[in-house]
Length: 415
Image (cartoon, rainbow, N blue to C red; front, side, top):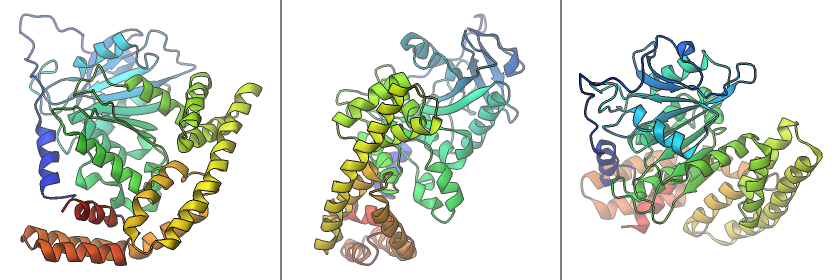
């Protein structure tokens, strides 16, 4: 449900407080110095800076940064009552993306740069300002953004509102606020096209005691229903809320493959995706590598194999999906299989005719679905649940291709 209890859960998770980091004692030397501008930070060093619009951030420049070759930029957003510096030691210890320039902003509500800081629901423009401040100072090859807990929530907001700045995202232990759900841009196809180019690696532990796993599932689901072609959900069974135990390193490998980077590591990982029948990831990676054109003969053969294997699987899957949709008059029988089909095969040539038909019908039914959803929500607020369910049934009959059918189906399944 997009509102009501779910909205309250999102708010509570956003406000969830990790152990507070006290302000630095006055007589203690700050762990890193301040710098006036990004270019002042030397290779192998970390400094505290302030972006033009006022947000403070920590900047770490890798030892081997080469201005000629450039380097990736990673923007990482901290959890509640934390600061950006709290996360940099873990990146160093794990050697996660250690060839990147790492930027770790501090939430604007903090009282001390090395103490407890918090972001707000209006932080996205400030994070974008920090990102541009760093991008303009270095030769940046590509930019990823991610965040943990409160930073995970904010990550979704940033990529939806500033898709031009980022080429990949790792939101961890967060959820997608209602005002950031991807369907809200359906009327702005030029922006939505940019958003859908961003691969998103969602991470949420099933044993998380701070932000309920259902919230990570919800975030993944809304992007899946919108047909994001590069989407992955890391959901370790035993992972709680611990950042350091999360599969961030694997997420970086996946993001790189989605962009056609690091052929050696990416093609090795993609071979495993073929065995797991994750055809969508394999197809996206193979296509990205072939588009870059800087492969040796062996790498090109492997990339071509990824694409051809995915296309062959898609031909069979498309035939089965078309048969299912034609044989089942009740959309509840094919909606969830369709969303998964589109996630796995949506980028293939074999799936394109089905996807085109689906998108045309979605455009026709969008307004009707939204109107019925608003009506259903109003009835739920006035505690007229039987009538609310009737409206949701109508929504599934009259607008099953709309985004709102996802919520109608979810609510009816859990009534």
